[in-house]
Image (cartoon, rainbow, N blue to C red; front, side, top):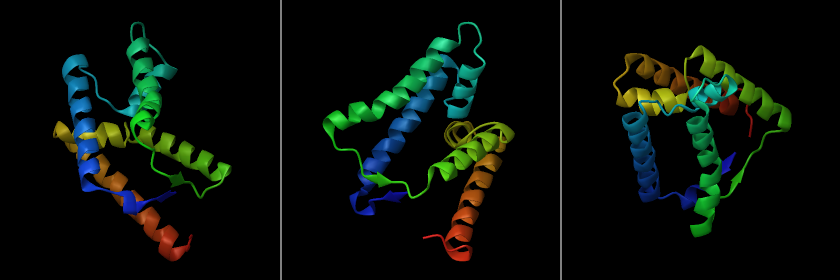
Length: 145
């Protein structure tokens, strides 16, 4: 995947972070729920009575948001340099990791850390260390372009 770093602006990054933080805080304050994507999607796979509508609304909002953004500004260009098999394997590994880690980066990194959860701190440190190690190995040991 390639990102256009020339288009990066600290102001837009800060605004995005503030919006994510506010949305996560409002979600927990008004609904008493953590805005972790793996937990929300997992609840769709095994829905409980009265629990389906808010989960569907959340996921639909994630899908519709880029379309709404595109009305006002162009979406940033992205390119994924992996094949279909690699994307499927990566998706399965992420799904497996979120099950073993009892949550995803959004649940632990955004919501858990804001609640000062030690478990979320450890999970986030492990997520980040695994990401750093993976990039290092792929770029400097295996030498993937």
